[in-house]
Amino acid sequence: MSSESVPPEVFARTGQDILRLSKGKELKDFSGRFNSAFGTNSKRCSILWKNLVRRKYIPKETSPKHLLWSLLFMKVYADEVILSSLAQCDAKTFRKWIWIVLGGLQRLAFDMIQWQNRLICVNTPKGS
Image (cartoon, rainbow, N blue to C red; front, side, top):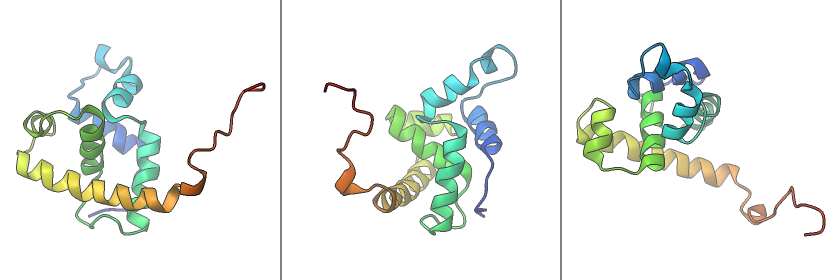
């Protein structure tokens, strides 16, 4: 059951489980590994989750790991068989949840991105 508020620590722990990182050396650069695998950090995952749940863009049965699976799929874009083995589930389950969450992310993007301003560069250097 999806709770509206999931702290970043939950996403960090879940990401650690998905990536099968143990304590010690592997966790030394955990934030870099998390970002490399999922394309963002655990704080942003928490914000994404909150927005997805608040707008009811994902079913109540969705869990934080499903968001991470979807982010992993977009970032790594490997074969389902490979990613489902990382996710420790079968390919059918993996496919089901990533497409449910990706649909929610797509709806969220249309709500949050100001399409008319998407090409405006805010931090243009002087003289450009």
